[in-house]
Image (cartoon, rainbow, N blue to C red; front, side):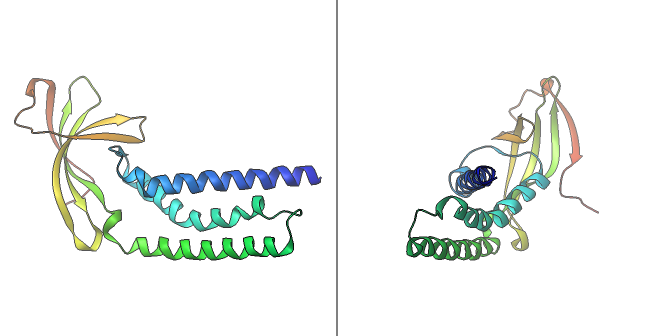
Length: 176
């Protein structure tokens, strides 16, 4: 029975470590990667899980760091440091909610669809929440694994119109 508990503790510890690494990647380097989420709802759910799960993952690392072989003082130090780090990270995550950095591109309209490939050309604005919309762009969206897209800015005056169908469909932003 003790062996099963140790396996569960190690599993929780490594799951928490992987989650922390994914969180750091998503909030740092991942912000500079050119790929974007294809679906706005998936984007929101993903970052919601990241924000709420990060402090929990830090606390879960206790399963791998507190050990019987350590002195009581060392275990208490690890416990206190982990709890304080978790509280600090939770406060940091809450502060991110009130910053402008978590805006996203909203599609106003789908202008063109490629005749033979799964490509679209969309008109988008950067949605910065209560502050309105920022920069506008027109991009060709190339899907990647159905979860992400690779946007590439295009000039619709320079595309080969024989390869594209003009559709002018309403996007994510609905107009009355």
